[in-house]
Length: 113
Image 1 (tube, rainbow, N blue to C red):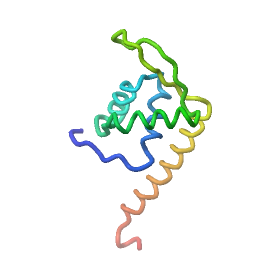
Image 2: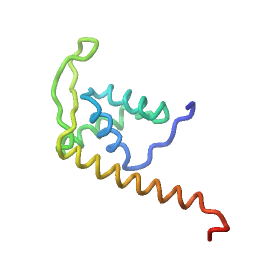
Image 3: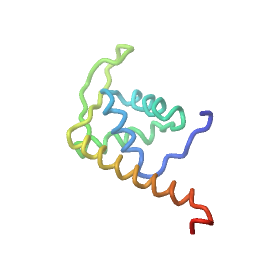
């Protein structure tokens, strides 16, 4: 895409939940997966990611387990819990409703008013 987008408040948790719903990931893997699934439009600073992972784990939306990374380092891998799946489904539905409403408003012409 060439241009990064500004992350809207409240969307980081949803993006993390989506990333770990695809497969278990360690922290840096979450950053890479979000970048990949956003087609390089979203780049999450590590200083924002790790507090969000801790918060999501504390609220039982993700679970963590220690494992070995691709380069043989010890890493904490995150997976989605049942509560996390419900939250992701609800937030995705809400986001899609909001995006549809905003698109409708922005695409309104003077003839439609």
